[in-house]
Length: 498
Image (cartoon, rainbow, N blue to C red; front, side, top):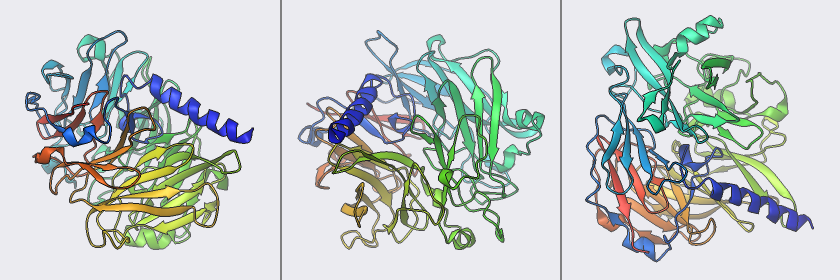
């Protein structure tokens, strides 16, 4: 009976994912940030036919760091690829031809790097992946903006049904909204590199610092009400710094929200929210319960070495136990090269992890992806070098397995050398069959690669096509018929023969 209950829980989760699969409204296709997509016809054999669609060649304005989204309104026969650029422009592209269906004017001037105290993006505009409210067709995103008062983070809402028109009452000036609540926040010292999240009718945005860690900033999470537009709540790390900068930002399991934080100010003597996996609730109240956070026992050494636990978002996973029932877990990878596995019901506070496994000799900083069935839970991640001898001292894509119980809850499954720094995704034909791990060799060989997710065997190299204008951490978008990769001033489309 318990085994049947566990299977029923998994079936319910898969059914929910399938019902929402027509559109991709958030980073990695779910609030859990698992990066799992259903692409009917994309079997392991069909992957070998994957090739660039040369007819799909839109010309856009701006560098692109955010993952594109896919919007297919109810009843529509064709969908749109939604793309946001660092020049603070948003585009809707025809999913088959790449033609521009609509585009916004420049919503506001982005911030040239020369106007920032530090950073590595020039100019800085829309960096974090936007999110769509599927009920209203509203797109939300954060745009760093150059104003007469200097850089300001502005949160926008656009109507996808009205050609990207700005919704009445938006944008909101984050610095001004927080000042009204007596919360210190200087936009020029805060970066917004993470994806936004839409949960229970509210929009969540989180912030870190900029590359170089200049100035005074805090890891910050904001909760917005869409209509009428309002900032409802804010959460900040108690110590300075502790940025929330993972690609996926916040992940949710339907009950809680999970963030990972980075290094806090050097010399901090008492733990104050840095180097942690932290569970937040709606309303963003600060919790001191050990059940609501996990911190490695060597957090001070991680602070001193700038080896953030917050290299990746925290992924909630449910692992089916062999004797029945489900183990509720959360996993995150750090810049110290470790994978941390934590009990999601009781995260354990300082030193409370279930297991730690060193999986890399260097930091892990790209979003992982999860493939789960009733029999296996696998997590794919990219790293600069692996402890696996097959990939040692080489950039790679690796897969680990998570067990719900036993003496070895985290173990290596496979590793493949891959020159680049993209973020993996997983495609299947029906949520389970033909699992393929895809990743782009961004800032390396700049090619699309696919591997059998169970064995690591190569199944595709995108016909050997070499892309240009890719940025590290680039994340693939999968729809029901194609894969898309955003780059400077364009989006590449890859098609296959079923």
